[in-house]
Structure formats: structure tokens, C-alpha cells
Length: 282
Ligand SMILES: [Zn+2]
Ligand SMILES: [Zn+2]
Image (cartoon, rainbow, N blue to C red; front, side, top):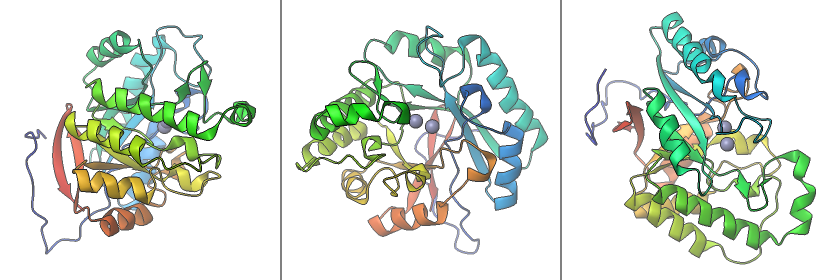
């Protein structure tokens, strides 16, 4: 199937609108997920999803960067595992993607990765703040006690803004990840959100509704309703992702995410093929 760029499709009233595609799923190559892509695909079919996308943690130039991503020499194996799921489930549209860590100075490496395989989309995610701190890693929870929450959020959203401005990504992942463990600033973060979403709009980046937040201490979809409302006002498009690290998490809480998107005003989301986007009705 080939997609035109930015072609809008009107909803077909006589058919039920299917659940949106689950565009954020991991594989065991990242060393903290279970189940092969074929098992995730089987789960998606059982749930009635018509489209999914694998977006495992991309390798870094140095394999010893951290311990929660695939090694560079596993990239071809990752692609082959996704291709196998595509062969096993021809009735399901399965996209090939990566969740890429955006870090300042890594742009050239990300371009190299992008050129290696025919990705359908790249999710740009920020997990790291200064000092090499992966803010969502429970092993480093103590570092939250040492830093002012607003400082961390501010630094995080600066990085997200740069990620959007880099033009390297179709989608920005879990936009308010710093809320994961419940460390929220008392100061108003609206200017941070505003700057990031303006960049996302200008650089044609979507944001994802990531339901993994509901399974964390914050018990809330990433991003918050407030951020999503601002995104809608600015015309930033959306995608959906479970951030599944196990087959049973595929499509988890999608009804809730869909409801949130509709409540805020969204009537469509994006689909990707070969890094080109198409609007799909919600
Ligand atoms: Zn992530
Ligand atoms: Zn993820």
C-alpha cells in the first residue's frame, strides 16, 4: 500500500471505525521486554487491531552506552524479526520503526540509522537529562530527590523541543515522561509545553498518546490532557502507542486513549508508510 502525503480521508459512516494503530511496541532485543514480534502481532489480531508498528529502542553508536537497548550488530536481526511477523500475519499491517533516543550531538548517528533500513517512521524520544541520567529508570530514582522538579522538566522539554526542531522524527514519544514517578513541578509549565508544541507543529512532528503512563506511578496517559488540549489548539497531529514490552500490553487502554483524544477535539490521527504520513479518521 502506498500513501500520498497529507491526504485526508473522510470517515466512512457505514463502517465501524477501527481502533487506531498501535505504533509503539518493543521486542526482547532491548533486554527489558518479553515476547517475539509474532506474538505481539497475534495479540493485535485477537484484539481486532488492523495496524501495528514495532519501535524498539535504537542502538547507540557505542554499545556500552547503557543496558536497555539492542546492540548495533542486532539491528538486522530486529528488522528480520519484524519481517517474520509481517509474513506470519499478512492480514495485519505491520510497520517497521524505531524509538530513537534524541540526545544533542547524536544527529549524525541518527541520520546513519535512518538510512540503514526502509523505516516507516521514527519516534524521537528523550529519556536522558544532563549528567547521563535516564530519568525514567527506576534504578536512578534517588536522583529525583537531588534535583528541583521544575529544573528537570524544563531541561526535558528543552530537549524535546530540539528533537522536534531536528526534523529527524515523525513522532515525538511520551512527551511528559518526567511525570512517570510523580515528581511534578509546582510552577506553571505551560510556557515549556507551548514552546515544544509550536516546534512540533512547525516541523511536522506528531505526538503520541502513550498508554504506558497508566501502568506507572503517575497513572495517567502521556501526555496529560492539558498538553493534549494545547496540541489540538496548535494543530499538532497525534498517533497512539501502548509502549508494549510484553504481548499482553498491545493495545492496552486504547479505548481510554481514544476517548481522551476525541474529548479534546481530535477527529483523526496519523498513519505512516515509508516515512510519509496519511490522516486516518478516529
Ligand atoms: Zn521511551
Ligand atoms: Zn518505548
